[in-house]
Image (cartoon, rainbow, N blue to C red; front, side, top):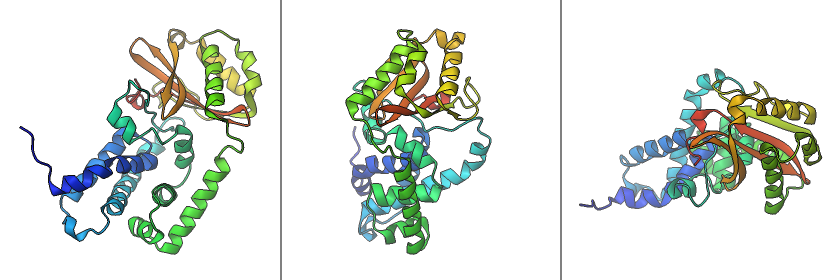
Length: 293
């Protein structure tokens, strides 16, 4: 027997996708984002909807506060995290969980999440509320419990940082897929790694996140020689040699998925500028692969 929706649900549910999107941009992990939305829902049930003039803005402010509290509470864990920390990828192809992907990842590229992660938590939250969801500055200030002047400065710094990290000449979707396919062929042994030099920027950066559980570099590697040397080394490890590789849609863009049967071992994605690869990011931490098919 179905239960009729309550007035609180009628107002809340149409905004769930936006709330998950906001939390995911601030937190970078699926479970934490879902928890933030659930906590927002619990708080919303104690609010008289009749006193809220703009529910969308109210709920976005609320979920952002919850997300910021989560960031602060996990700071110690992040300080103890072994090696680089990368955001959690989410499958967005036709076979994926339609609710989760539609609500969280399809419009949030991993490249953007990496850039957002380099901001301070307050800069990240201010940028998300203002630049993504277009909340007026006074409402962003209320959400962050800062003055409007302070919030304008936060947004300005965040906007400048995002612009600085963005590709100057981004490749289109077909070129991005072609570059990803080149890496797939290298992973499958169809081309020699040395041939990949032509598609790599001399300043390419490789970041690997193993969480201290899987083999990964403890810090980002810079330059083609170091990047190719690391890739060549890890590809000879028994646990990696056994992997099968495929290209899949992750956070709305092509990425490589390495797996052994149903077990997902890693996800690799690239960022390109002016026709060459400038970033390679790899996640092997099993705790971050739960949203990959």
